[in-house]
Length: 468
Image 1 (cartoon, rainbow, N blue to C red):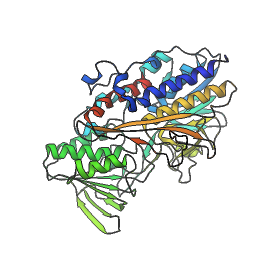
Image 2: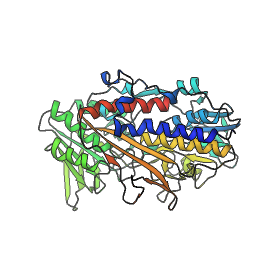
Image 3: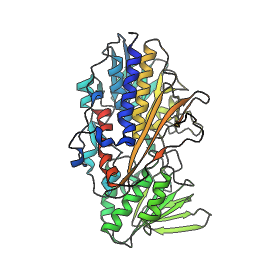
Image 4: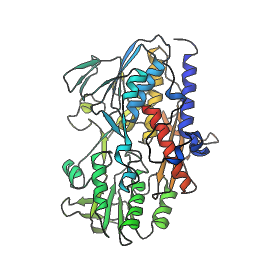
């Protein structure tokens, strides 16, 4: 491996991080293609330097299998090839031919977006970077033999295995998977349930919409509050002022963008949104859509809803008893829901040679699409270093950024830079003065139409970096 290879790749990490994160503070629209402000609904990629690099010349020879084609899996497959070079064979195992973005999917509910604009294929990963795409499902892992078995009966050997399986949703509130699919959609996995929930909302009159938020950690911390705002805006605009949105949050307070969403709930959408923190004993009848719960002080309450969107607790895909992840012993968090990893490389702390990134990982970072992209780059960098006989970067940096639409034309944003804290071996929010104690993410000071316009540029840039 050339001596200057690792520093060069690290510079690319920093450049990619800057392109996808710091622009929130400096106006991300200025990094975009000239026509982006004129087409907020398009899903075109923002092509940039990091989508046109040639593969590195490292001389490495290795087989890496990546399981899961979401934000984390697509990104790590791409960057493993870019930084590992032609000798690093990367196979992406993903049963679906297209990925539907969870980011921006709440905008489908108010008609701002069509679900088809959120679809991405793996053609660029294959054609531009030489990633082999295998449309199959993982069924088992043999960590001793370093091989995986797929749903088509075939097996793949690996030198390094990267798991990015995402999450699965647990039965909760008296509901089943069939209830989620047909009557009370959570729509927290973008796709058919998103379209079903949009149809149910479109059929509402002056009625009540009830949604739930599970205890953290869950996918996309600001996402549920964003959903409440968009649904409230849609209902009061198109379905009458008597419409109501009840938010039953199992957490004791708003989990992200507290100032922004508190203002949205109490001012912008005042009289429409009722926010109930610390809700417990939630029970939902999928047939009558009656919702019973205990409020913050333990008083029994009931709501008769026209539409119910419960976001149930979730866990790493395959971590249920008998699941392939559990069988491999990878779901090693105390509650058995997540995979604990070493954040320097995202290698599992339970099984060597296996890395876990994205929503399935327990690493201290939020479970979000932009973060998944960042974890993928740290993981790819670490794997290439390890394959070359080196150690992972001892001081990785990750960026978290997202926009949150508050109405059909305004949005806020949230951003944070995370650095490695060697004392507790975790990623923590970095502070400008270097003191991380008490440091928190930065949220937008305003809710504006400018933020809403820049949101599409941020989204297109991020998706281009992951799939383009």
